[in-house]
Length: 131
Image (cartoon, rainbow, N blue to C red; front, side, top):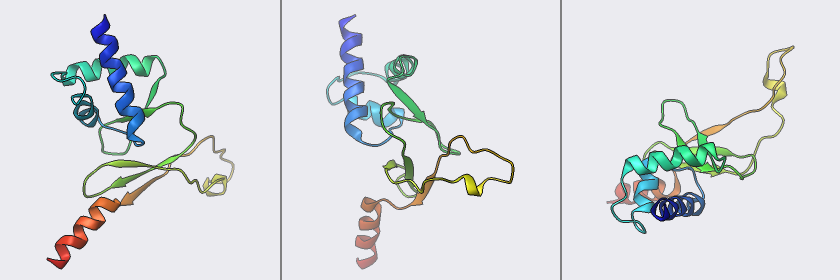
């Protein structure tokens, strides 16, 4: 049982430390630094347990595999880099969007995803453009 706890703690640390939603593969890559030999099946098993416990939540983007982030974070949105496919948190919110809904509709919540290039990919494109 200790192994499971150690593995789950490593997952928690990777997810909390990332400051952005992570795919299962990104979680695996991060956890392998402290728990060598851990496999993707163990990552998925622990993700399921952490979801059931309410420790993490799913970040779903159209056409993408789910990513995971801590569930205790305040309301925020996301940015997806179209080059590296990583997803980042956006902590600003445009606010009340009820005026965008059709007349007679009631907005209960909203999600907003921005798409573009992250700063690493912008810098990388600049470097290749000048070469």
